[in-house]
Length: 418
Image (tube, rainbow, N blue to C red; front, side):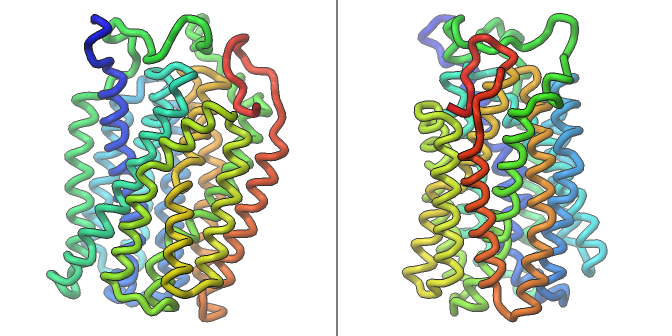
């Protein structure tokens, strides 16, 4: 392939961004816009709506480590496609739910598919992009979540208006159908490694790449014995717990306590999505320049400010500023974490490392919605839950501050803590 031709890594990145759009943007964040109508249709309280979010995240958590390990051993392409197909089927079945119990089952199934596709696709970028481009690539890929916000904010209010009481069901049918199409596309266009096409990772110069540990098989102990990976995982817990409270109950808080209509809430949700389109690219690149640690500290502080504003400044100006601040930093932490795993352990072990820290992230993410929903039922407001999210985000900043350089398995890999 001549230097004038488009490197196939860009194709992988484009498809990977669409995978994130289906696995997270629709399967997880679509719930935020559908929630008020779904809650009314099923006759469930705030604690149960939080439990449905938790059910989805438990499914995601169950596949976090397994999906990464399976992808590392058998290749991510097939695992990603199968995961998207499962997520799409779960969303279709969610649209058929008749009550809380079966809705919870289908949300678990959707979460399993999301975990099986999102974790491997983020780690796949470590194979296709060299260290100096890895943060940039991860930052672009996580924009798939932003596309989900934009799509949901624009489409859901219109579908709800057009289909009345069954509008929320139609939304899930649309989400599921799109995700099934993306499953076919990922199987057709993704490739496991550049070597399959006779290529090197994009940006590779032969100097600063991390060995992929092919010789003698995969060295799994490098993942589970790494203090660096465990510390990153604990920091990731704070992100999972805090952001999911904000995202899950964003629309509910605007309508219930901010005086917003469904259309107005959808517009602000969509605005946050448009702003967040650039956040992964921005902060992935920033982390390539100033280091993963410093970037994490800054982003956690921005999140704490956004959650506090959303809780305390309950006016259109306060809500909008909160949405913009979160949008500017929303998907940056997953991008930085994915890049850091590749930095520390290299392309072949990056899926397993990302799976391990996603397991820890998922614990915080799975617990938070139920806690927040119960707090809202007890107090009659989401304010205390949002302030809890802000406090946990501050703890995340402290955890990032305490990250220290640790021995890497490579002699030339970039250390994520600089």
